[in-house]
Length: 417
Image 1 (cartoon, rainbow, N blue to C red):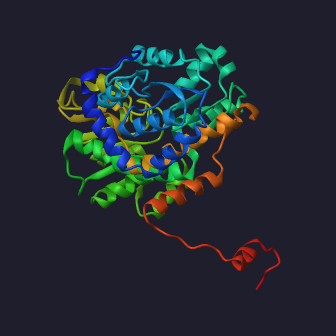
Image 2 (cartoon, rainbow, N blue to C red):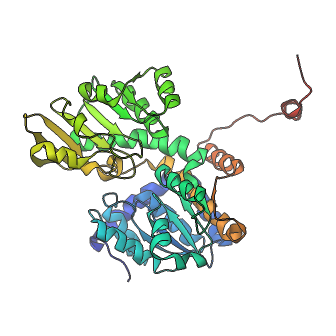
């Protein structure tokens, strides 16, 4: 079999986790049943670069059921769940991912996936897409289209779109309302705190939690940490998001000021150097710092190491840095996304909608990609509504519908007082 993972003997354990995730992902399972009959992805070769979790495994097996051939790698060196990777490998799926990959391993795995010569790509962070563009542009001639799962990746791809550098069309799955409003907000908000708790076992009640960034992820973090009794401080560069945070009842200040008072720091910006030397110099003894953005650039670890006399792993995914003056700063998950590195990532229930969007978008590309320009496309409102209605139905919730008279009133332009 063509795979490289940590330990094939973990497969049974991984299969149990996948079975559990399936029980929590009714939308994707219903779509699997539907598309396993029609096989809309028959003849498609999908190169995937996405966190190898139990939820991803449900998506992978759904894509196979829909007729696709595929090859898979992880999209972050510390996010792969080795037992899940083993469960996919024993099913004959080419997978190249293990927890603790170095940078060389990471790109080797992407190159192995690209040996499939894909017709479609599925990415989280856009590393596979950029690998095609920078190292193997000839592969793009055969690629009909691709999808992108995360905020950081979409930002990078929209920049490429503006520069007219894209070699094939991309659907911004991340920007669907049934993705970002749920996966980023509820998923990141809960799973990040889960990762922090597993790495520290602290109590959040009474802590000052500094959250850098008040986008969808930052809002979810603030909601959840506030619900656990934390005092929330938001740092921002966007005046509109900062104003929203203030109106939501949170303190807003510069990181230079927040660094003096924070107990826990969580970066969620997608930007480099959010926490740097000047901040570490004024943090409290015992401050905890972590990141939930896609890349490990938000916390400048080099600056922290420069200031430190020693470091040690004091708990799993928790490194204690002792500074020259004796203060201790605790870095979680080596500055990588703490919700996946130190925990299991988003709950299956929210990934159900995100991955339903992935599936439907890939089917759309298989059928229409050849007629699209090389741009970044949003998911249509109709797709968002279809997934939301299906999720509500499977949760046994019902909603109202407008009457014909109400629809006429909504669309009329001549109605006045």
